[in-house]
Image 1: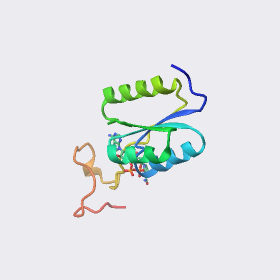
Image 2: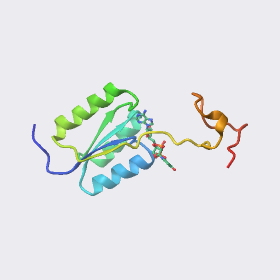
Image 3: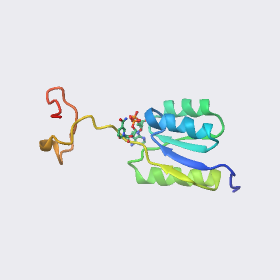
Image 4: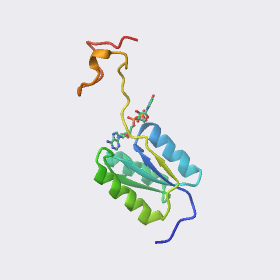
Amino acid sequence: MSKTSAEVAILTGAASGMGEVLARDLVNKGWHVACLDIQKEAGEALVAELGDKAIFIQCDIADYDQQAKAYTQVWNKFGRLDALLANAGIVDKSSIYILDWRGKDEYAWSRNHEPAL
Ligand SMILES: NC(=O)c1ccc[n+]([C@@H]2O[C@H](COP(=O)([O-])OP(=O)(O)OC[C@H]3O[C@@H](n4cnc5c(N)ncnc54)[C@H](O)[C@@H]3O)[C@@H](O)[C@H]2O)c1
């Protein structure tokens, strides 16, 4: 394995939103970026646009084994890791102050239950 001279980042949730913007910015700054996301089509389209400094790995970050496999793949390819950007997730559009939703599996947004801001 040869170690690349450019800095290397793993970026989760890279296929859209803030992750996508971050991926573009890092590549523009000369970084190698491993873009991890569950969205295969969008992730592959992004790295096709970004060129050979970016790779896409389909990965559900909620699955430990998938993450471990992805990190190993990145290490084997680049031989270094300078940043882990744990961006993947969802935006909770509800209010944290709706106390009767706490601790429930079904969370969040309901048109019938407007957040009390
Ligand atoms: N946008 C905001 O105002 C805001 C505010 C505070 C925090 N955040 C946080 O910032 C992060 C990005 O926000 P965003 O607005 O760009 O969201 P987004 O929904 O546009 O993008 C999130 C990305 O993460 C991916 N993703 C979701 N679950 C995943 C999983 N299990 N495994 C792999 N990838 C997964 C999605 O496919 C998507 O590409 C999120 O964690 C969000 O909670 C966002």
